[in-house]
Picture 1 (tube, protein in one colour):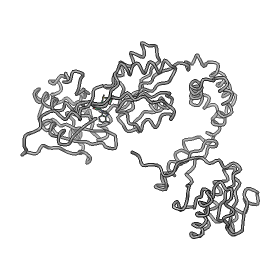
Picture 2 (cartoon, helix red, strand yellow; picture 1 turned 45 degrees about the horizontal axis):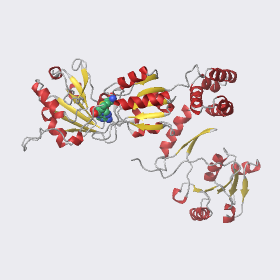
Picture 3 (tube, protein in one colour; picture 1 turned 30 degrees about the horizontal axis):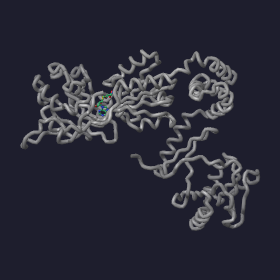
Picture 4 (cartoon, protein in one colour; picture 1 turned 30 degrees about the vertical axis):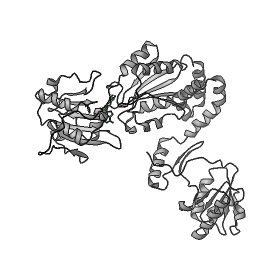
Length: 491
Ligand SMILES: C[S@@+](CC[C@H](N)C(=O)[O-])C[C@H]1O[C@@H](n2cnc3c(N)ncnc32)[C@H](O)[C@@H]1O
């Protein structure tokens, strides 16, 4: 579980609110500069102030209270910043503010503060606040710099323009879901470009055309995106997957999809879990198909999230066929499949000029149990392949390959929980595969690679890889099947 947040971000309304800044030096000035972006009524409490603060007072942008600090000034304050330059004095003021229930920030002293001020990217009315809870302010600065360069300086104009259209669009499109889609199209397409390029008339006519063609644009109809959510690491989502995720009214989610990926969806999107856990409750494929048709037929935008790529051992074809038969618009968004992602993570090439010209992916489990594979072809010394769902049947796969003539020395690499924080990588040889799986308690999900080794590519085995060699002197070798609790499932 991720670390709980200590500071919860909220935006305080400072319009016409009384805000006190104690101190007249540089630190106080910095807070004042920030506060001047708001419509707060600023009072600076200090016997002496610098030139800039004085100039601001002369312009009527703040008041200066030169009297010694008295708790009475805390009455009715919305916020207080403290930077008097005297640590003991600051601590007393902070305590007084707490006693009066006034949120207080003592500059650079979070232990005395009840709030901290984030790094801010200001594209009013859009504001991005970045906080690291004091852990790494440099990172906050880096994020701020990146956002500054990514968000055009007039990005706020887009929000203001949207604000101006809100009421008329709400009146013209009363259906909330439909309205959201109209907004999604406006804010992602030509309207956005026109506003940012300051072509206001063009923007107006785009809005008019959009509203005139609501039905023609097919916005009233539901649709389903079959999305490949990748192997786990949310950073491996494609941009298109991210977009479709954010548009969705409903998420229909498989078990292998990392829950962190759902953080990218809208908070109000409904979530339906249809995963199959080993020996756990499963939703039948027929039921999943029914859910997809039901949700899309109700006019919802559905994101069907599948681990890896939807078309690699994902049963997406069955869902697609059912949806097409029901006349529902579909789209398939590719994802990074486990065999590719897990190999890339450990710098293990899956094809090599001259040496590995063919690479296949096979399943280690079928509905019937034993995988019906071409063992002769797979045992060819030039064959390289990845086995999905192969943990439970690893002893059987080993036995079949050896019986078909594969070398006992064939390299095997096992990547468990690839790209996730608990990723584990084991390297062994075919002869030792079963012992390795049992002794290292591999539970999956895991991809098993056969016939691939770093040395063939002139690469060193990465340090993170644990090498397993069966000890020479040992008791009875556990060639039995792997514990039922380890069983991976076939979808
Ligand atoms: C039903 S298949 C789905 C494959 C998925 N559609 C894909 O393209 O990766 C499930 C199998 O994918 C593999 N797998 C999925 N995610 C994995 C991960 N993060 N690490 C290792 N193997 C994974 C395992 O072999 C697991 O048993």
